[in-house]
Image 1 (tube, rainbow, N blue to C red):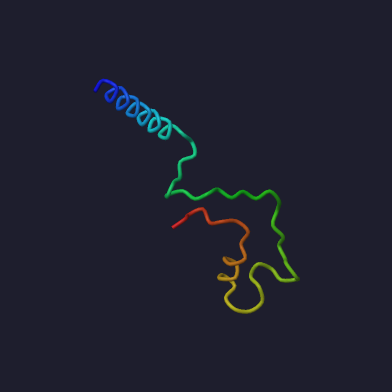
Image 2 (cartoon, rainbow, N blue to C red):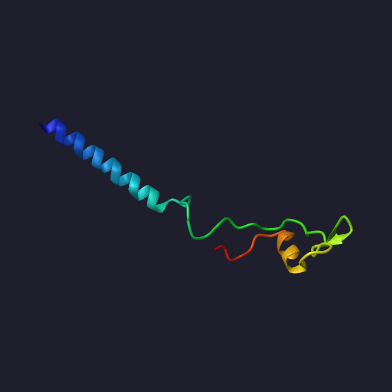
Length: 75
């Protein structure tokens, strides 16, 4: 019976140590903030002779589709 108590206490201590380690780890997944993307080089103003607005269609929509950075507000 005493061996059973010792093993139960050991398992409990290991579980508590694992929980404390996880709570203090920096690699937790966050559902709120996405990964930060940083530009290492300047984005070109034109690609194939066309600007980020493109040719035809909706210039604002094309600007959004052709951006080089992720939006700061992740919904």
